[in-house]
Length: 437
Image (cartoon, rainbow, N blue to C red):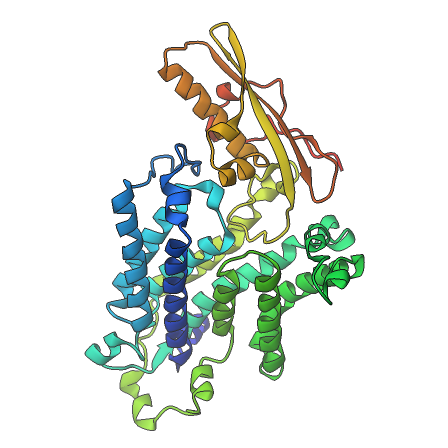
C-alpha cells in the first residue's frame, strides 16, 4: 500500500513534457538524416538478402516506394509526438513503424535503436502530453502527473547506464583498455590532441572513466547537490563520444534521456518559471490513484528489463565472442572485432567455395564475418537456395576466423560441423570454437 501511494503521488509534469518534445524532435531529425544519407536504399532496398532476428524471419521490407512512404510515416509520427498531437496514438504508430525497420536487418543493429523503441512504447502509457502540447490545448492542461511516470521512464534509462557500466567490469576494458586502445590509434595524426590520444595512458584513463561514469551517473543525477556537476559530465561524456566515434544520434538521445533523472521541474527553472501558478495545482489537477494491477505491471516491466540483459550468464562461453545474449543487453562499445569467412559447399557430389562478399553489402559482410549467428543464418540461406535449385544433399561448412580486442586471429566456427544441418533455434553453442585468451 505504501508503494502504491508513493507511485501515485503527484509531481510536476514539466520534465515528462520536455522529454516528449526533445525526444520527438530528435527522432524527426534522425529520420531526415537517415533519408538524406541514402541509408534507406543502402540498408533495406539494395540488399538481395537480409539477416533477421530469430522469431522474426517473417519480417520483410516493403517494395521501394512503400518503404519510402513508411519512413514518411516514421517522421510524421515523430513530429506528432514532439508537438503532442494525438500523442499516445502517435507514439504507438512510431514505435511500430520504427521497430519494423529495426527488425528488417540485423546487420544494422544498434543499442540506441532498441532504446528508442522502448522509450516510444513507454510514451504510449505515460501521459506525456498533459501540458505543452496540442492535446493539452484541446483537452485542457494538467500540470501534474503521478510519480510512476518518472519511475518508468527514468528506470529504463537507469537500466541502460547500469548495465553498460557493469558490462565494462572486465579484463579487456579495465586491464587492457580495449577496444579503446585500438580505436584511439586512428586519431594519432590529429593536430595537438592526436599524439596524446594514441598513448596507452589516454586509453586507460578513458576506459576507467567510462566505466565509473556509467556505474555512477544515475546516482549523481538523482542527488540534487551533485546534479549540476553530473549534467556537465553528461554533456562532456556524450559530446566526446559523438566527436570520437561514429555513434549517430546516440549521444543526443542519451542526453535527452538523462533529463528524466533530474528534478521534474527542471524545465521551469530553465525557462525562468520556478513555480507553477497556484491555480493550476488544485485537487482537480492531481492524477488518479494507481490501481494495484498497474503497480504490478510497472514492477513486472522493470523486472524484465533487469533480467533480460542477464540472460548470457545462462549461456556457456564468452558473450563478446559468441554474441549469444549480446544484443539487447546494453553491452555498449565493448567489442572491436575483425574477421573473414568463406563457405565450403557440398551439393550432390559437387564441391566449391562460396565467397559471401559477392552476395552481401559491405556492411552485411563486415558484421557477418564476426557474428556466429549471422554466419549460421547465411549458411542456412545458402542451403535453402541450393535446394530450391534442385539439389538434394547439401552441406555447408564455414572457414571463419576473427580477432577480438587486439588478440591474434583465431578460428571462430568449427569447420567440421555442417551448419546447414543445425536448426537455427539451437543457437550457436554447438559450432562456435571457444575463445583462446
